[in-house]
Length: 537
Image (cartoon, rainbow, N blue to C red; front, side, top):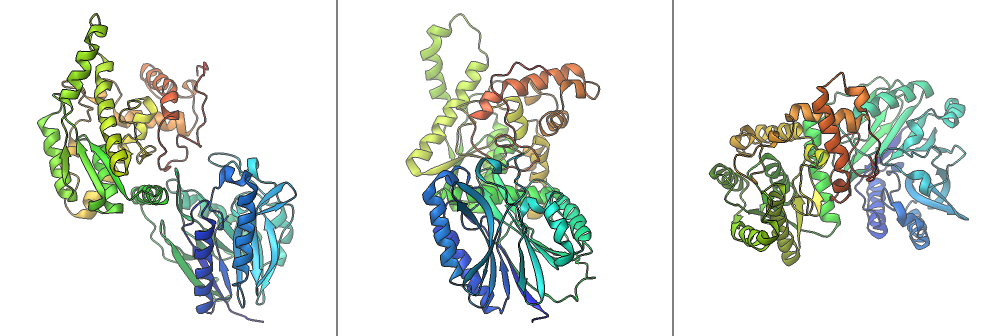
């Protein structure tokens, strides 16, 4: 029996529904692992189908295709062991499963026991819970198989077998939010110490709609020390030996800062949404403000300047300062700027509506017309040239409804949808620090935010200061606090106003494009509030 077991954690980026492509990637990595004399290769959760497959799981052919793929993969496991995530079905019951493949055979199958059904997870809608442990032998070591949530909870099944195993294998599709790796380490460290076993954690990376998976796979010894760590937000092949000699080694590791993490998550989530949905180019409407500047910069970083179209659409309300800022930004990014004045179109709208609006005063109606004209132009470029429109609204605006339905909300992907305004500024400053110069012009960071839909307009004519607003949003949305909980923490009139704006804007958010999740509770799958709702908190 081998004393040393050579392992391979395959931290890969899968695509939901691309069973053929995922299978090809799995087979190629098994070949690579065998060429490196590895004894064991481990893949993430639901490797074959991609995660989360959602209602694709209701299609019988999808399940059959995934089973056929597993059989094909199995044929490549001569002289190697592999753990592969897939969907198992028996009678009418589906399971989120891990197959243990060895020497060209399916030797065992483990079914996920603890199915998460909170936050973005809906696994009880699709899967049945497993009811047994699976222990596999590799060399002279015994490994218990687990899938994601099985190692986050008090696992009574593992508790029963902890004296019989050397290592726990955990295959995961654990979605990212800011600093989640700290939470993982803390929980897994307790498990390693409690079960007195090492942990081999293999996590998915990549973007899937609004979710981002950050990888960050690791090997942990039975004392809860991380002895090996995979990359964040990148595919990574982690090869190592288990020989019992590394039990006291503590790895020196410098993870990304919170702001760096978010920047990388936004890049990966946006790139994968573009790439996996068949787009190659994007179009962005620039305003001269910080949000569109950041989205444009991210787009250039992930796609290259040749694949980014920037359009500036001024009216009489647009300041010369904004035009100058936009020109400077586009020069810094190396992207030609297209300028399309919408004043004539706006005047035409006003003229056509004059008869109907003659006894009214100008208000938000006229402001929103400008935003909707801009949205129409961006969508025209999208249709004509197959560009994906990236919208530029942030979480602070989406929370309070400070965005125009069918206007600046019109588009295919909302890059900053879950990024509070204050964090937008932090990311922009990080970008400039990394560049060594004001890649995003300093004036954009310094000037007061404004939509420029009327003269001398400022965001804070309508909204509280963003530093205050973002704190209220965090408490009310991410922590599910109510007015009663918060009334002694904030000015009560401001609090009431913000809560009312958030509640009344649910119908808008329901019609907004998806965007990258970076907080513990994002809009979309995370927060499912009824639009018709009379509850006053």
